Figure (cartoon, rainbow, N blue to C red):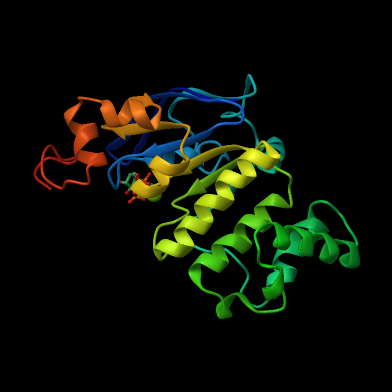
Length: 250
Ligand SMILES: Nc1ncnc2c1ncn2[C@@H]1O[C@H](COP(=O)(O)OP(=O)(O)OP(=O)(O)O)[C@@H](O)[C@H]1O
Ligand SMILES: [Mg+2]
């Protein structure tokens, strides 16, 4: 379980998080949603130590992780993989070598063994037939799937996705949704997804946390959020642009 306890974070004079309280339960797919700039990416970056809180605590299976040094944070990053919005694949290496690299570097497999396993991970995301291509030859959706295969090489217990379907065409987006759902179901990975994509949200989320003004403003199942009478929640999930904005006067 990942637990955020009263997390506060400012940048310069701007207070972004104002006491985030949230528990991610084992095995679930939890979506974090909310307006652009509300602090969704900042929230999940706390889990892997890319951002440290000004105040509050983060616990992983009951152990505090917000105050760990880099050496101990490394162990956390092996358990919690993060898939970033923009591809972080190495352009000069084939798809296969991109996925084999962490197996060689972190799991210390021989090059031949790493490549063999990398193929199996690529198969898991239906990308094995593209193993010998360079990332530049792939579509965004395909690159996303390779990035997911690479994250799986660490056999993480948790995967954090930042906007996995943003910028993808609807067919690719639904494939990524199906993949996330499948990983959760087949491997039991606990999943946190930051997203704007209403289709993903309402088709694969077990629970949704809606951030507003630096806090978890609403939390519940997709059905509970759909039925919410809260005006800001309704405005977001109905995709309406009018109504109260995150930044008044913006
Ligand atoms: N490293 C940083 N230094 C300074 N400001 C930052 C930093 N990271 C985030 N911010 C600011 O914190 C706020 C929240 O950013 P964040 O990226 O979490 O938004 P978001 O909810 O993920 O938005 P989007 O949906 O557009 O991705 C923004 O105003 C952003 O400019
Ligand atoms: Mg973001």
